[in-house]
Length: 150
Image (cartoon, rainbow, N blue to C red; front, side, top):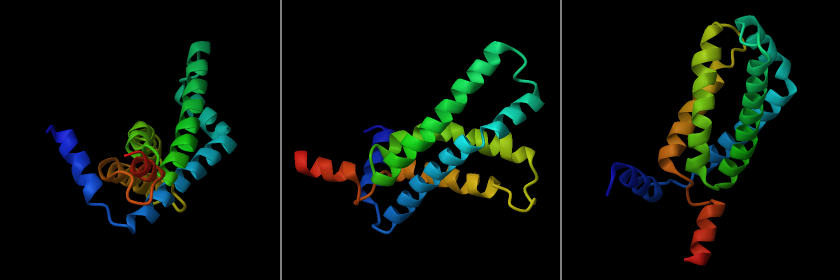
């Protein structure tokens, strides 16, 4: 049994029921941040313009694709994590986005600044890593589907 299989086995068999509420809250937080990202795309454009990354057309197109990818990962991933569908997969897919949010964007701002969102990003990052190991839990759509088919 490989290390990854051991982690998955442990996570599948050591899941307290109360952890489901945190999984649902994590999914809702990702959905909320995806919607906030849609409503504030100008903040990303201003940040990238200040860094000088949008000087060429190809950079602008790739940044637009990156923004769409982040929105899709947050919205689809948040829904799937909240319902317990492929939780580990969507945690893994959202991991680079959250690492970028914590280390590239949030650390540029002051940590002690009032209303700083770095704390939310750090909490979501830790939760993503936790559910990457822990998995769905007992009250998950994927768990119910496996019981009816197996």
